[in-house]
Amino acid sequence: MNEKDWLIIASVYQHKNITRAAQQLYTSQPALSYRLKQIERKLAIRLFDESQKGLVFSAQGEFLAQHAQKVLRDLQQLKENLHSLDHTRQGEISIGVSSNYAAYRLPPLLNRFRQSHPGIRINLMSGLSEDIFTLLQRGEIDIAIVKDNYHWKEGQQLIDEDDYLLISEQDFDFALLPHLPQIRIVHGQHVTQLLERWWNAHFTHAPNIAMTVDKLEVCLGMVTHGLGYAIVASYLPLPEKLYRRAIILEGKAVKNQTWLLYRHQIAATPMMQSFIHILQGNAH
Image (cartoon, rainbow, N blue to C red; front, side):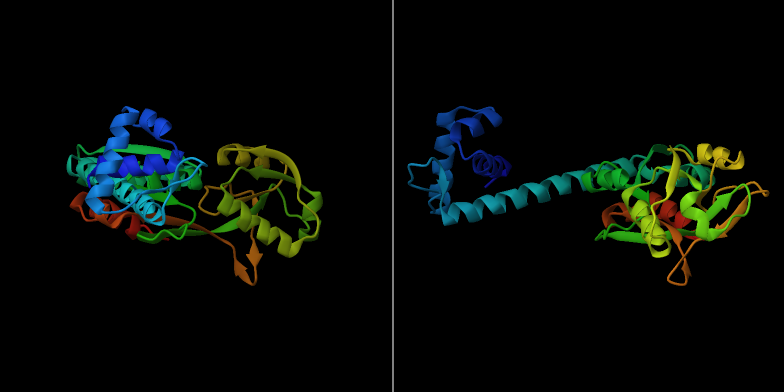
């Protein structure tokens, strides 16, 4: 059985139709039918049951089709891992980073890495954490720096942790917070749920969202000019005149965590080990 055979079985199982499977595989229906007969003879099985309802897989056929899907997934994962290893061997690293970490914490760390590895090409993508994690799952990046570990099964490290703060131009009565205008920052799902859990633990009314922004800098400008309060991570460079207060849930400060996620195969290369070491050494 080769890759083409697994593709044939998976495609026929997906479409339950020889003609459509042949079209997907850019082959003829007779050629595909002939190859299926060869697979049956080679494995001494029967792929299909006789039925007037169309193509019906036998119990053996069902088992083989499910195995074909697994083989193809594993093969794709192998290709992605080998591709990533080849990139690192050639002096290229692909990093996916949550936007705020990319703006406020990553630049000096990348500078240290470039000083010790001149000539390394860095492909950097920033965005919401869940989008970055999807890129890691697909094998499109070597390392993800995100706001949750997403139950990642391979390499992971907590590399940064800061308090979330309420900030405002002036002090305010905490009990009146639901009635005060909030400048809301667009977050990924994990952070959004974390802050909602904190809010619901303290208030029965929804927040008064006066404005929604997608950049921390914009949010900070609005708060500085008295347009509302906001909830931000404490690693932000805040003007001294702003009032700030840590948000507390179950007696503990709510933390803004940043996780480093990677595949073990990628971390095996000396260049990647060096970069990971720099990130780990910067943990707050």
